[in-house]
Image 1 (cartoon, rainbow, N blue to C red):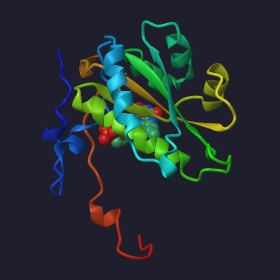
Image 2 (cartoon, protein in one colour; image 1 turned 135 degrees about the vertical axis):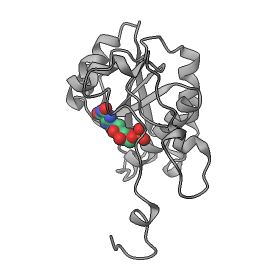
Image 3 (cartoon, rainbow, N blue to C red; image 1 turned 120 degrees about the vertical axis):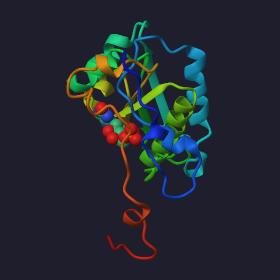
Image 4 (cartoon, rainbow, N blue to C red; image 1 turned 180 degrees about the vertical axis):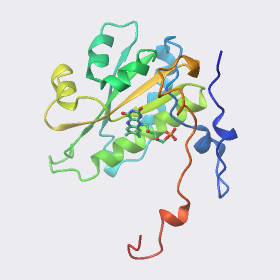
Length: 198
Ligand SMILES: Cc1cc2nc3c(=O)[nH]c(=O)nc-3n(C[C@H](O)[C@H](O)[C@H](O)COP(=O)(O)O)c2cc1C
């Protein structure tokens, strides 16, 4: 029986940071066990405290538990490659964000940014609790909008799979081999003092 790698054994931070950042990664191997509602609520609680423009809190999370009535609908939104491993998730989440300010209806230029911040908080909390959290762009946004009654003034941002760690040896071939924590560009490649010079 295989075991998911420990991220800290594969990742070295170049500068001193809290371990929570390198410990979070996006495994695909999950064991098909449920995630309890109180655990899920802790993830949403973490998301809740994210910063946002004017404290809009314009993120919204729709979810389905694997044993619940909405599971088949959420699964059907996913690209085939994601369905292959998400069938062992405990919860599937669709992340939305409101595109306009609640105060005046004007376009909010950072709704996606804010939803990303909240999603990262959710994922860090999940990782800290020993859960698998895995963001996904590979799903049908139009279908999600229709199937989940998402109004026009909300953007469909991403999906997130949540689950309990599983045996990587049971993943489909092709995914098994890449089931390890990835590296990163050095900060010199992602940051510059002053004007754009990459
Ligand atoms: C918004 C977003 C969309 C992603 N889409 C997918 C996806 O559709 N399928 C998948 O297997 N992984 C997906 N990933 C996972 C990324 O490939 C992964 O986060 C990246 O390789 C960095 O690895 P790490 O999260 O393990 O550090 C997505 C991640 C994010 C944040």
